[in-house]
Image (tube, rainbow, N blue to C red; front, side, top):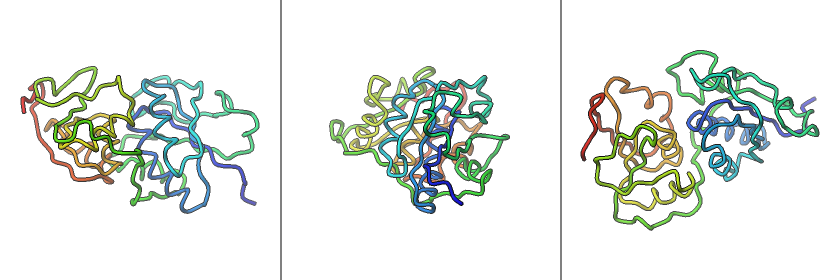
Length: 233
């Protein structure tokens, strides 16, 4: 007999890997008729990630657990952990739970790779809900860079920084004339929202994000740069 409790999905990765679970959650909701509870490991910007998750129709609620991965190599590892041992309410203990993560390296689209471990599927029609467009930067270019090791310092565009929430930056981006970004979690956020972006990448890893992260996306204009050479336009 099927358990009537809402399913719990644990995630051990950071921003990008967490976002890439959403097409699986949407498939589960549409196929099984149940929203999902998401148990997150602790990582930088996790509060902003909780806001993003809680805005999606397929998510009942996102919960910050006390679990901390031992290392990040291919996502957070180990990714198999019991959410009831890391802060989830005891009343939920009858709920089934599933650990999403990377059992090995892969070149597959990440949602498909997560799903195959449990025989689940992917909703290729999924579009991330980000609320209302903010036209503060209408007619202007904006950029979301690698904040720790920026690539786009010399490029003339309005920077969207970590001082804003992820959702607010996405709303700004939706209202801008052009969005410049790089291989970061924000580019995955843009892709899942199906917003057009200009995407700077190195030739050394030319197809990594395209195959593993961007199967669901809006239009992407790719600009290749050389390792160690920062773009100026």
